[in-house]
Length: 464
Image (cartoon, rainbow, N blue to C red; front, side, top):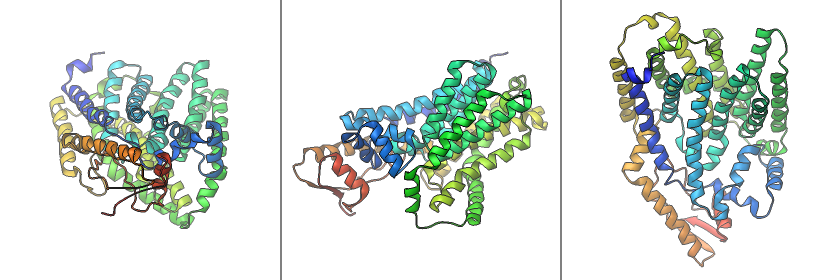
């Protein structure tokens, strides 16, 4: 196969765009700081063991044992504050590695792997709903983005195992199931559906049960029950006052699914159309396992995944899922947009259109720059542009000044002899890495957690 990396300007533009998109998010890791839930979770190991903490949280608050494990191992509890920045870096690096791994297992071709991975990474960074929860706030990244990373690894490993079975692969799949289900309920649902589809596909194709996939499905089912029957989940759900009726929740979830497609899916879909059109001749030579099903299957599956991402939140807590949860819903949107784009390009008259790589490159750059500067740092239809914000926070110095301001705040708390600390509100709030400040109310949960962490009686901030 011709080396598409050397002979095609569009591929070069895509690779450069992906690198330039990745760069600011890597640099922002230097300036991220622990906040909110981070201090509360970091306190747990001060009076309980790791296992005792897990059991206590499972019984009284949450069944998300994987996320809980990461949160209570926060390095700030041992005074290793730079470790928090390293975790952010690790979340980005693992995401990139997982993406390349998945596409290599799908294509087994280095050139195609690079192109599809760059497209996937760029679209994720460009359009993921809440970037701060993905990389820079541990309570968000450990619960939702880490689940996305593990799901991507699982897809790649499951394809690898399907093609060539081995004991180490199936053991790794069992481990990944355990870790993913312990992150959050939406990722759990997505994983259960994915395993079920593979199990059914394997049975229909080979006309016999595949016991590896059956045991994996049973294992996932057992862990799902462990999550659903958690006393902590029941207690937390019982504290919700506003419950939405079943039928109303259904229609609200449908509405939310449509909104997600329009807010985050259109730009992603257009970019993927350009990418797959450019690579159509090389891709059509391959029979990808993941593309076995007919076109309408992926359309229906997309809506089902989006619906199931919103419906549990509406039914259980009476509200739309927060943006950090929509980060998880965005993952199947991105994957299915790639599949649907491929199906459209290779199955219709678009395949025979003659559009030069130069024109494709111009269209791609026009989309990137026009969307970035039109949306910018504004809340345009409740959407902002991650790439614009990342570069803005770096170039303007807001991220650097925020980091210095937070360091000065923590140093002031540590050095003060007062038991009751009153702080000034933060002046610099870079939106790409900042989640929220403390409250003027010293009884606010996060204020109390920080006060306990620093061995103070109270901590609050001045009213603005």
